[in-house]
Length: 618
Image 1 (cartoon, rainbow, N blue to C red):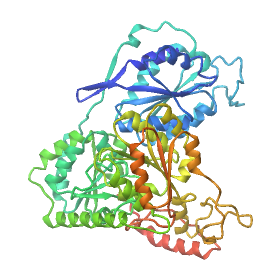
Image 2 (cartoon, rainbow, N blue to C red):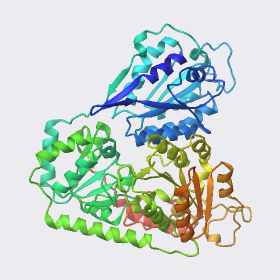
Image 3 (cartoon, one colour):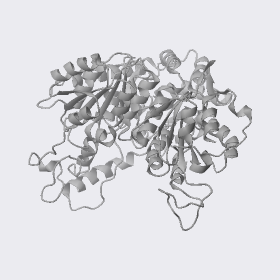
Image 4 (cartoon, rainbow, N blue to C red):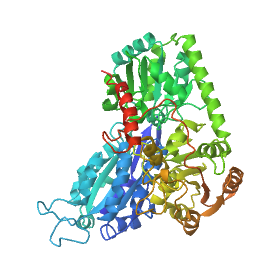
């Protein structure tokens, strides 16, 4: 059965716009007793599906997710593990894949289908049912889930698996749990199962009447705004979006997943929108009378917890491959592919343009924001550099073809605002799940997907300590990464949030306890930092490591890293309190309603004042 499964995977291809390619580019796995003699033996027997060794099961799923994102969901990797902790380690990765709508196939081993030797090593027992294992935990984070008790069940499971993985609307993590005995059993599979199969990726078109109505709404709008999400990039619609924007004078705000939909220097690109947005995009959002959402799911960061769009009569036109996302905010839904739908709207909107004054206003907002980025890039903060200026150094010194990756902490917000994207893949941010530890594993997936590009992994000390081990895998596979490791002695993002809630950064610093309690920022300099040497840790994992203290040393380190042939880690400390502004944004995080702390009561008062701005968009 395992041999049949692996052989089937080697024959699956996808096609879009006349271009065909294999769908599965390889398989990551860590062998345990639950798969070593089944899927492990099959991978050994059929090397056409390249096997990759990982150091952590969660990390290998992150690698697959980043690979699929880099390939615009047209190719992915398989991940397999033994039953038990190996399988449950993959659950976080499955959530990342499903929340971000990215295809990944997970093949966790499972307990014996025949049950007679139960309980086996690592088996979760239940007194209420014998039909349960830890793999049932994958159900809520998988778009398709199945357990293959018998070899012949593959015949019905595999087509369903591929239907979901290749669907633009339904894709995400697919989990096939494979009991360790069933994997090794034989069955006379029909030869047709192993014939080359091409799955066509459709460019579905929305209802014609809905498109015509959307065109009417756009023509009626005085202050329309596009919110560009990841669907623009997955659809490869960036060029038609540029034509649409230039023809009609409609400005664009970009989500985390949609950053790169337009080049940063386009005069109608207002940059990041929402909680981590620019002053330009957030001001335009506040007065927009029509919001055109393209490939966005309108997370709370994009909508600023439903406070971003304040025009009393604001309406929404949502272009999305899923009816679920297209219908949000009581929108006029255009359920279809971004590229072909924008092309249809271009035809229907011939001759339409936004008022000249509005276009000039938005272009001025763009130029003012670029000046603000220049200001932050030019900061020379002392004694430690600021995160914003270090981001600027990497942005300006990296190749225009490079890819920057990040996922968690305070960096996503600063990068969303400040990173100047030169192409649609220049900015790779996992922010659907904002998963700490994604960065280095994800960087490996990007490099595997496009080895010719430089990959800059930007990671804070907190996220690095979660999952830095895939440095080893990058070295083993000769996939060079440039890892920029910024050390600010703790969890900086949540520290800033904690301070805004009146809690003084409690529990967010990497320091020794004081008087039996972990101190917050109000303890000042009277704390003792932990004797942790992250640079030494990276050396121990096999990386070339450059330590620096100043901006000038950081510039020299980047030049040296670019000349290296193996994964290089640049280690630098930065000031945890030198942040980038919020630019008229707000995020709903409720402080305690009652508290003995004056600072918390003050934060609650500020929160109460903001709550009435939240909208229902009925």
